[in-house]
Image 1 (cartoon, one colour):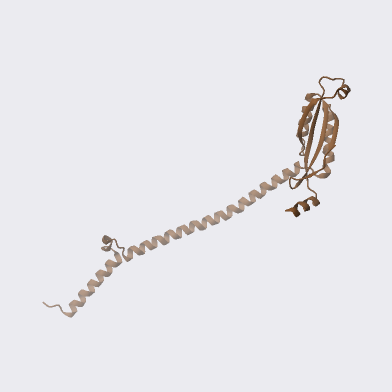
Image 2 (image 1 turned 120 degrees about the vertical axis):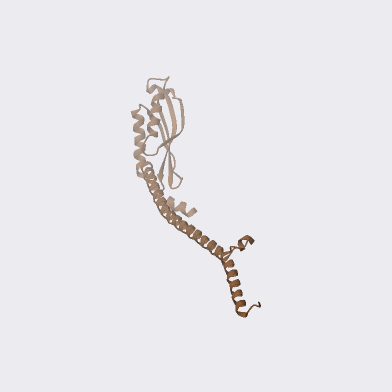
Length: 209
């Protein structure tokens, strides 16, 4: 029986629907390695979900980083402040240097030593932001007295560092003062301390940088 125009139209419609379904679902196209529209939509949706998840994680990380950075800065600032407070308690002010030297001389006398020489050196600039003050000392006494005295100087609350220490036998004339020409020693050393630089020195340093 010959096909009527009506049946042909219906058949073409069914074929179109079938092709459309196959193209949308990809049920047949998958065997050919081709994704259907639905598969592509699902893949796009999955990628969008993944991107949304990653963006949420990035936003959370940024928020955490910003919060931690502020906390880190605050912690570092507090640590620096404490370090500065400690440094200020150790470094003498210029007006305190004379009193510290008096304290050094007093400790020498307490230990039974005689200060035989004291020569202040000219202050030197640095290390920034300090000036360095140095003094040459010589004391005469017994070995244990010298050791105790140097320990006293090193343990002062303000920074006062004995350096370039040398110990020799005391000259006979000085040793006779103690009535002991055999065990008397002379300790020669430098004492160094650091004082905050004066404003003029700071201006000079800044001008050179």
